[in-house]
Image 1 (tube, rainbow, N blue to C red):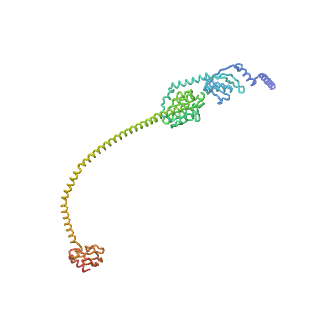
Image 2 (cartoon, rainbow, N blue to C red):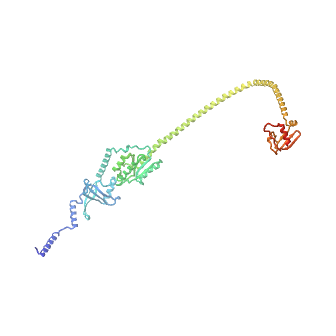
Image 3 (cartoon, one colour):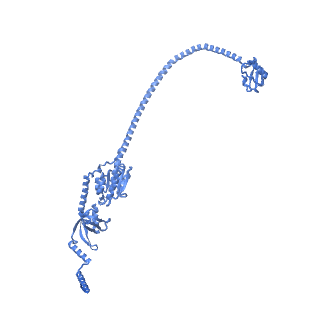
Length: 481
């Protein structure tokens, strides 16, 4: 077994040898210097490198003032979890002009887009990152790819029978119920709605507010079109998409496949008024009708309704008014002719009647003397015959009157009183004809030829059957009185 002191010495010597062996180790800064030197030897700054990759992430300052950062991956391995990533930087001095050129060409960098960049390799010492500094972007190749994508989308839509499908949807004759897909408050929105408001027609506009540019615009536009299409022809007549002018990048959403498919498959006809004159998007191509501006779209819609109004209302109204005037004029002419004919007939009838009256008057004038003489002769004859008849009738009436006078004189009260009869009157002056008319205590007056006696009834004897004679009863009554 070795002595402990010897073991300690051995360990110490081994430590010294180890320290001496690492006297030539690099520092971190030295290591980075070596790496940077190696990179500059293989990839000098003057060497132009072209790199092609798919954008995985992009940080784009909206104002164009600042740097742009992108992460690129190989298109073939873009979906792999461990796909190599290249950090790309575009400094403000380069990005400002480059972004302006992309805007003019209607290009907006977005994830999924494959780009070809020229630049140099860069080593960022603080984070030990190898990146790529952009000096140029191949816009021609990018435009070619975008055009190819657009052409491929159009071919796919035509192959599926969707390119002209919405164009075959019938537009109502009077499209007044409008589903509007737009961004309220924008110039395009105001231009379109202003045309409808100034027309004087009763347009009913249902607005679905959407974002019309930017990454979220395609989803918003396609969702709005589907939402209006789901309402159906029973509630809406037409879907209109409007967007004012802008760069090609601002209008890129209308070339997106979701928007084109939503428009192509809509059950309602879709009209578009997007951008300025000369701008034609895929949405315009698949729509039922594409107008060059929102103003023109509103004007076309108003003109369609105006055409129906003119044909169905104004023209018919004008025709009715003209026909009514013609009918009234014809009726007036007919009435005038009838009035003239009636006046002529009336004059003719009056003339005939006057002639007949004159003829009859002349006939009467000729016959009147003879008729009067005949009448006078008949009257004389009748008068001669009536005179003896009247005399005889009067004599007969006088004889009858004398007979009645004698008869009446025979029944005169005074004559009867002179013959010994009496007349009994009650207190009221009425003739008492029966004993039953009186009661005990009644005052009666008995008239005689030479006067009257007033007496009071002390008792009554009424004849109820066979018994004394009437004379006996009168005598008894006198005795009782």
